[in-house]
Image (cartoon, rainbow, N blue to C red):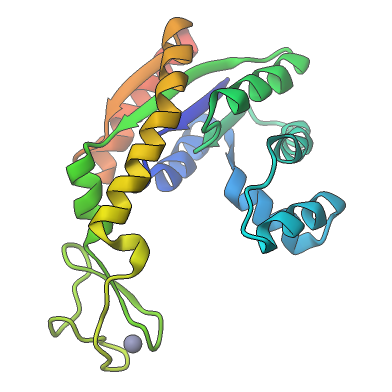
Length: 218
Ligand SMILES: [Zn+2]
């Protein structure tokens, strides 16, 4: 069984994908982790990827696909994969279809973790960072002992550029533009499940697990 987990930044995909992988005996594949691993190992693919990353460019789809192939073949004893935050575009979805088809597999269920923009802004926008020591806080979930002051070193906390509301909303707009065609693609095949991403991580996980079970029975 192969599962695609879609959702905006800040939806908690990484944590949920790990739990789904453990529960359903799947290999958790995050292309971000995959890239960092290959670069870290200094493999040929990793070196090619690094040359793009150093220039601040996106790693081309076909290079990521080559890394995916290697990984897909390494999942012995597992029931399939959960793809975390991949594909992001229609072109990547078609690449993934091709890779899976070569193995006689397909995307069995695509789960879309739905989190309203305002909730994402509240989650990501609540982050406060220490410019001196790098400690990260969250106004809601992990506030510093003293307002605006780093517990570790006493510096004044700041909102990083990436965590500013207008930047988050811009990222969300880009995300939705790219994701809409994926929702149509998987929706058209009847494999799309929309799961509300609000509530505790535990509540969200139970909904996701139900959606994946539903996909397995299809
Ligand atoms: Zn600090």
